[in-house]
Length: 73
Image 1 (cartoon, rainbow, N blue to C red):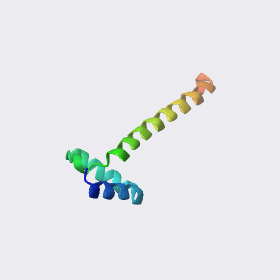
Image 2 (cartoon, helix red, strand yellow):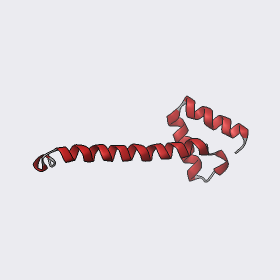
Image 3 (tube, one colour):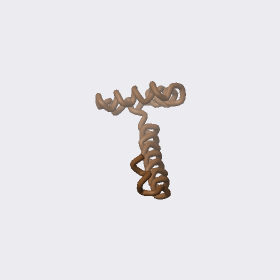
């Protein structure tokens, strides 16, 4: 990635996260590998995975404390 593209992508990440995500998704769809902010994309993917795992663990812990009949309510 060029320094100019890296700077633009990193500043977009910090300035407007939603716009950055849309830009990165478009670059991925169009296979514009030189335009992707790889470091931040990788961190966001890992973060989503951690978040999902934490959510599932929390829900399982909550479900395990409820009586079976109340799980369907």
